[in-house]
Every structure is written in structure tokens, then in C-alpha cells.
Image 1 (cartoon, rainbow, N blue to C red):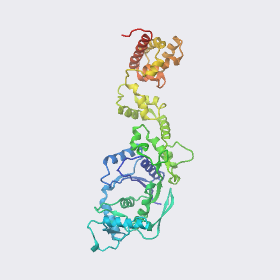
Image 2 (cartoon, rainbow, N blue to C red):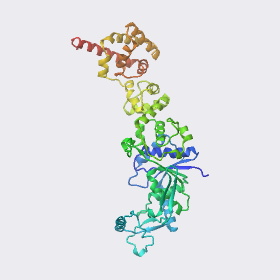
Image 3 (cartoon, helix red, strand yellow):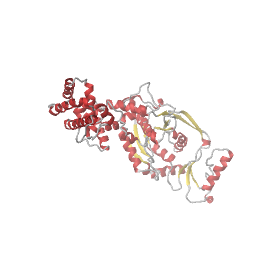
Image 4 (cartoon, rainbow, N blue to C red):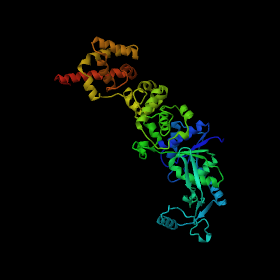
Length: 478
């Protein structure tokens, strides 16, 4: 049995979206499951639409998601001489010919076919056209498709799919400017790279019989094919860029972990019993392309967030710390003064669904604020906590061991001294030191914020309560 060789062959004419990443994942998993080789090929022959930015996104996206390649990236734009050689081989063997038809001829041909109720296709008139009938000196080159018989695709996902050769026309394999077309370059590449399994979206299924016929004309065994159904939105319609994210790197910006996205994508059309959580190792061990569903899969954004929350909780601060730092810095928040992001992420990871959310909820650990959330302050910063706050200020100012345990102990002692339940002092204290009513446990929060900031904010809360009390009592604040 030949060694398994799969490829991911995106065109850099747009962003690498989740449909492309899922295709890459399935190809990667199939290769890894069979101890095979995974190849990255950039199909950049469309020079007008291909961009370096799109190439960079493909390569960086693959690195971020963790789909390591064994060979490549290969670039079609660097293989022009090889394509010309394959085209010449087809010409020499009589499996290709020059076509001199003008645009008017082609349009007339199309109109006549439609008038007869036939499928519009090239009628092969240049197959035996003499050079004396040439109308222009920039011909295209067409592949001579077999006239009879059928092409049977034994698709690993779709099952047996057959096409009659009589329905296929003589497709152009070289344009009038000499540039090769998609179906020719793909066959040449898959042939030279010895691809054994082509795993791609089912929008390419109609290209497959044409490519198989070119393989046969070159006397090369075609690879096996597996065409993956497209991804649909929640309403069963074609996925838009907004719903699927314009680029896979957009998910990185949203604070999604790569392992969560991979787990999410592998379950879009593939399953193993009722299991939902898969490590990379489990995916490699269990994945079989034949288990991919024929029907299209629909996205579920809530499922992705659920998975991301799971992987956040499972990740250590060592891993999350640098990621949190990146998201904070993108918000203009410096981590030079404040808690270590590694320690903070350990505390925050239980409370959020994305790294972006974690960064936003961590702002007060690094940035001071000038006012409290109005609703939280109105509800919790009342006169009843003024004296307890003053006592806490003194206790925190003189506390020798600034630790969670000692901070919690001081809060408990002062709550007991003023005959208050712990929650009646903890929640106002939370508003005082964070500016709002939501944070991790109060002792951990205070320990991470640090003594200096806590004292400044506690003093600000004391002044706020005093000013508010004077206003409520009819006093004049100066």
C-alpha cells in the first residue's frame, strides 16, 4: 500500500475561513491517523486576485491553529515551466489541441445549444480544424475529453457518483496568454506530489470527473477523493463572512483558543458516538474520513463558546498568561504595573468564555478608574459601610503579610467587630476596589490588585460615601 499523502491547497484570493480550516483539519487528521504526509500548496496562479496578505494569513493561520505541515508550502506560481511541460505532453499524445474559436463563435455555439434545449458546452469543432481556418494567432489549448463512457467517482464521503463523458466538454487547460487553468495545475501538482487522497469541499465535486480524465490521459492513477459538505449558518443557508469570521485569525482576536476551534470544527460533520470533547491525540486516533456525514453541518456559536470555556478552564496560567497579556496590550493596557498575568489568568479563567472577555474583565487590575459604576455605587456604597471601610483602610495599611489568607482574616474580623455579615461588607468592598459589582473572590481580588491601589481606591470610596451622606443630609459639599 502506498504511503498516505494528503494536501491542503487554498487559493490566496481571500481569507482563510473556517470552512477552509475544517478541510485542512480533515486532511491533516487523515494523514496523521495513517502516519502519512500532509502538504500545504498555495494555488496562486490567479495573479490579479492573489495577494501576499492572503498568503500570510493562510500560513500564520495554519501555525496558530497547530496544523503543522510536512512539506511545503509549494507555490503554483513557481511551477509554470512544469505546467507547460504537462500541457505539451497532452498535445503530443493527442489528448489536447489548439482552439482558435473566436468569442463570436463561442457565443453562437452557446445560443444554438440552448435553443435545442441542450446543456451549453464546446462542440469540439477545433479538434480537427485546419490551420488555414485560423482566425487569430493566440489560441487556447483544450483537453480532448473522451466522447463516450462514464467517470465513476468512488467518493469516500459521498459514495459512488457517476458522470457521463458526453456531458463533459473539452475544457480549456491553457489560456490565450499561455497561463494554465485550475484543472490542469491541480492534476499536475497532485501527480508530481504523489497525492493519494484529495479531501476538499463538495463545491469541487463537478471538477473531479474532468481531473480524473486528465489523470487517465497522462496514464497516472488518480487519487482517492473525499468531498466534504459545506458549512451552513444556523438557518441552513450559505455561511456569510460575518457568521464564519472573515479570517481564521479573527477567532484568535476574539479570544478563542486554537484547540477549542479545532474541537469545534472536527464535530462539524464528524462524530464518534456522543463524545463532544476531543484532544488532538484523540482526534488523530479516532478520525476516519468515511465517518464524515454527507449532509451539510450548521454552525453553532454557543457550542464554540462552551468548548472555549472548557479549554480555558483546563489551561494553566503558564499558557494563558502570555495570551492574556497580548489581549490586554491590544486594548492599550500595560501589564508592567499590576499582577502577573499568569496568576491573574488562573483566577479569571473560571469566569469567562473567551480571552477577550478575560482581558476586558481584568482592566481594573492594571488601570485606575476615576468613578464607580453608578448602579453598583448607589446600591452598595452607603453610610453603613463608612466606618468599616475606615477600619479596613487602617488594617490594610499596616498588614505585614499581603496574602489572600491574611486579607480574608482582616475582612472577617472587621465584619465581626461591626456585627455585619461577611457579604454585607465584601460586596461594598468589591465595588470600592474594582469600580463595579463583579470580580473573583474579594480576598483574591484585593491581593492581586495590590496594597497601593487598594488603599487609593478605598480612600476614594470613603470620600464618595462621605460626600453622598452630606448631600443626603442637606449639607453642602465644598
